[in-house]
Image (cartoon, rainbow, N blue to C red; front, side, top):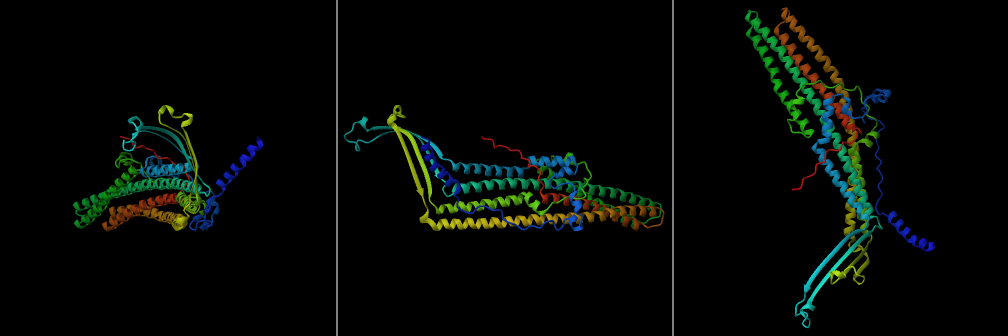
Length: 490
């Protein structure tokens, strides 16, 4: 008896080995894409300061918004990752891809269905002339369980499952990539809001100073020591400064609306919270960008492109499998009787076992055309993957150089703002002492406004350039799953 069981297990083992070992089409291998050992625009590499890179903070893998130490910014980013509608759309796509992947996995197993039927019919007297009315009546009842199973001898199912799983992983990476975009967009919009509020403060403060200058000019005119020309020039400069306020106030409101929608709220939902001005948060001195190789392993858009290449490669195998016969094993067991009481009796038993073969060798031209199409799709997916790698490197290099130059510009603008404020103060003192004319005061105040506004704008650009670098580096923070909302049935 053990010998018989051993012999019977041999063909089963052989069939299992065949089913698991044979899969037509190319196996996926990650393409080799040459990448540099470091970023060309990494300031630490340019300066030769390698030690600074090793101690640079914060890390690109950190949740960058927390590094700004701004509770409002942190709350906005977390709210957006939870409720942003674009993220919910991406989550729905992932859920759909995941469901299709699970569906493809069921092809490994037999498809089992159950059927049942009942009929009551009567033949016409012309058909059965010799039969009585009762004899022309006929009833039939049947019930059966049917199973069908495709034997995956050439890997068609296996390749299809492989492709669907790759698509699901690509969809998950799409969700992660969109998370990077949304977090970066919220941070950029928030920093722009604080920068606009600072520029608005600068405009209003300079308007106050110019209003005081106009008052002094009016006093001098009333005392007979001034001219109407001086008053008109001072008033014109004040009005020009005041004209800046509405545009800046409108930009503040638009940015507040943008932040509200990014966090899944109505446009006016955050006005009361964000109306109170706040300073731009402090920025880290340096950010460690890592290496290009680390970047490519971290960027979700690159990962998604590679997974789509994987899926396209697997679909070549799905198409190639049509060159070979498709074997289907089917079975039926059931019962059929002319009366319900006779169903499932011994003599009412029905059964069927069948092996089907479907081979498209007579349609080989169409099959090879489909194979050529999947080959072309895979070639396109390879090009898209290589392009994603290059764009990721370009994005990071651009962000590094923009941040580096923005920092230098920021330093010059800060000194210019400080010096222009000092010059305006001295000009007013000299004017009060009679050592300078009004033109010197107006020119100094105009320069002060321009320098302070440029400094506030430059500081904002530096902050947003830092966010752009974080976004390019695509930190590996945990994915927040947006809220799932079910469509209610009515």
